[in-house]
Structures are given as structure tokens and as C-alpha cells.
Length: 420
Image 1 (cartoon, rainbow, N blue to C red):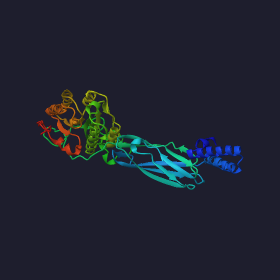
Image 2 (tube, rainbow, N blue to C red):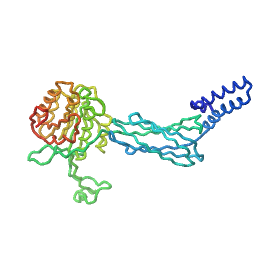
Image 3 (cartoon, one colour):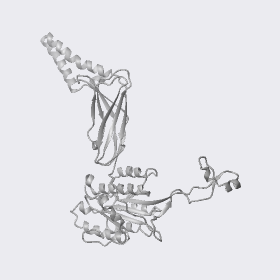
């Protein structure tokens, strides 16, 4: 009963106050009709509180997200499944799911009655213009009386997570491989599995194909031996993302930082689909990516990436230098000075292809008078070391300029800020 009284709504408290006032006035004035009205008005919220407080509904709840990952600006459908597991039908239920502000307003629904063992499914959509991991839930159920005098809230404990990944655009195919002596389409390669390839036989293991049995070794060793499988070769590369706060301009989804994250996601997914073993490096160092589902691991990591307070790319350059076997380095860069560009440019040497996606931050903030000259200087430094330059100004999709990554050799800088 105490819980029911605490659950009185504003209407219920008003009824209770009006009823008490009517009772007091009836006793003072000796009005029997007013006394009856006072008893009725006072008893109504009290009875409603007692009935709602004694209600023992047992509901089960399940939530499904479709899809569990959504791109920035995309929609996801949330399906709630409620089941009444008791033998009694429910009364009026007010359903409210908990969603963060970035996904929109909290969805609310009214269920008039759920029969015994009945099931109800409710759908609603969420949409976010921001990257990140957003918790959805828990679900709260408000039990109310028909007059709206009492509302008692009970919550489930389960919650789910929606991952909003950066926007990924399809990129045209561009040949980025480094050249071996004699030409061809080879990239610098590394053994995908640990250890060097060994064609010597080994012991038979359950599940091995019997066609690989090495009979001569079997006869010599006295136990079943099989030929080792030829190990897979995999091209490897590194993706550098400049996350320094001072290196980017603008705010919100259209800032240069968000454009850089989207460009890195598009390039990473594109290269992963072409079979490149990729590692992600930022100005804070190397990021951990799982071996399986590389594209999803990359997108999940980029969904949570934030601006860093770092002032230099030293840690990122060190992480790139410590990696072995990279045949390709793609750097998505904000504003940097020529000296930093020179340190980065030295990573490229014979057998390594370097691609620099330079965000022209002057197009985000025209208030910097020297930004254009600094951009040309950085571009000249990288091009002088043989890097391929992709200029990405504000309002331009990475897909429309990605073809520039095919251009090789030194670049002639023209007055318009492009590369020829």
C-alpha cells in the first residue's frame, strides 16, 4: 500500500486532497451529501493504489536490433517482444524504452490488455548522425489504473548496444601495389601464418586429407605422415589516421575530423575487401584489430575513435616504423608542418607504396591566411619522397578523388593547390 501511495499521479493526489478537504468541510458544516462525496473522492485513489500495488504481473522481455551496426545517418529497427507468462491478463500498460539523446526521443507505447500467455511485438526506429556505441534499454513498464490516478513503474535489466559506424563509400579500384624488380602486380608480401614455409612432412592429424599422405616418410618413420600444406601469402599494409585535435577544423558531423574518419573507414574497408592484411595506427600508436572480420573490427574501432590532445605524429610514426612487412602505407592527415611531413615521408622506401590523403583544412577555415601555403609545402615534401598525393577539400567525397592515388612519381605543384 505504501508503494501504491508513492505511485499516485498528480491527478490521484488532487483527488485525495479534494476528498480530504470535502470530508473536513462536511464535518464542520454537518452536510451529509458533502460527506458522501468526500468519502467517494477519497476512496477512489486509495482503492486504485491498493489494486495497482497488489498487481503481480510477470512479463518477459526480449529486444532485437536490425542491424546491430548502422552507418552514420542510417536507421536501425528495434523490436521489443513482451510476453505475459502468468495466467492473469494484464491491465493498461505504458511501455517506455530507454534510448540516448543521440538516437532520438524515448519511444512510448500503450498496451491496453495482454491476455494470459499472450505476446506483443513492438517496433520503432532509431537514427544517429553521430558515431559511437549507444546503449538501448532497459525497458520500463508503467502499470496504471483506468482512471490515471496511479502509475507504478517497473524496469527490466536487459539492455543492448547499437554501434554507429562511420560512413563508408565505395571506392574505385586503384592499383596501389609496390613493384618488384621486373615489374608485375606484386606487393611486398609476408607469410600469413607464423614461421617459414616448410614442405617437410609432419605427423598425421585427425581430419587431414588422406590424399596428402607422404608414403615414403610413413614407411621410414613407421607412423602415418602427411605433406605440409603450402602456407598462404598475404599482402600487408598500414593505415595511419591523424586524430590530433589541433590538426582539424570545424565542428560536428561535417568537421574535417569526421571527414578523415569516414575516409579512413572507406579506404580500410576497400583494401580489406581486396585481400590486404591491414593494421590501424593513429598518432597515439597502433590500434588493436582482430584477425577475423577485419572490416567489422576496423569499423568498430573507428566508431569509438576520438580527438587526441597530441601535438605531434611521433608515436604514430614510431608505430609505423616498428611494423615489418608493410608493402603499403596510407596516411589520412590533417594539418601538419613540413618537418612532420618529412619525418613521415622517410618511411617510404623502395618496395613500399605511400599514399597521403591530405585534408585541405583551409577549406574548412578560411580565417587562416597561411594555411594554403603550408598545405603546398607539405604536399611538396611528401611528393618529393615519392608519396602519392590525394587532396581532400571540404565538401568533397573521398570516392571522387581516390583515383589520384594511382598517380606515381614526383608531383608538380600548381598555383591552384592541385598536383599534376
